[in-house]
Length: 290
Image (cartoon, rainbow, N blue to C red; front, side):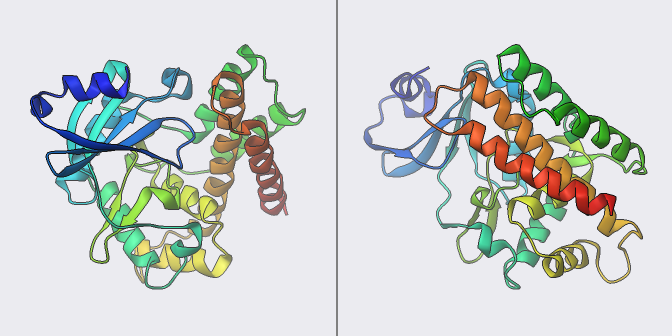
């Protein structure tokens, strides 16, 4: 589905004047455009090919995005073409966070407040496990001619053993793709965008995913857990669980890169992306095994 076709098919835009469309940079799965219609700004997300191979559930995405909008932490969902992977949202003004922003003392508590709101939201249908997802990505990547590093099977077996040591936690709504660039700060409110991978899961994965993507140092991890759980509510195994999920996040990202190396047509070094995350998996695994 092309941008012009989307503009023509959104009922609220019929007869309106489209003043300008601007491609948005930064995504490595989808194509997005800022569109101005009768003086109002929107974002049209054109879904990438073979989203199902990446485990993306468009119905679950819509439910999570609409929930976030109702809670005041996401963009308003204007229209959805789920079968085509098209999502139209209202433009969210503000500054996109960088990875270096997340650890800042004035920013991290606001990020955590958003996560606590997400984790307390109404459930959706989808389920997510970083461990099962990484195993599935391995299968999909190999089906598309990408074998991955020689150690991949050993890392996945090690991760499964590690997972078995974690006591189960009640599943909550999780975002599961907490890149700093998915947070937009208008100076008053912090909003979280891009709900493609949202599903029910372990809240510690969101915490570990955030820590991994922002490369939080140990003292920032301590502040992350303190802000999330408060002075007396932190589980006794919180630091270990965070470390496990941080490695699980990198393993998921690395195997995601393998799949993309096999299926994506974008001019992006997905093999290099996977290699960088596999290096972080190796470092994280060594630290956990000490």
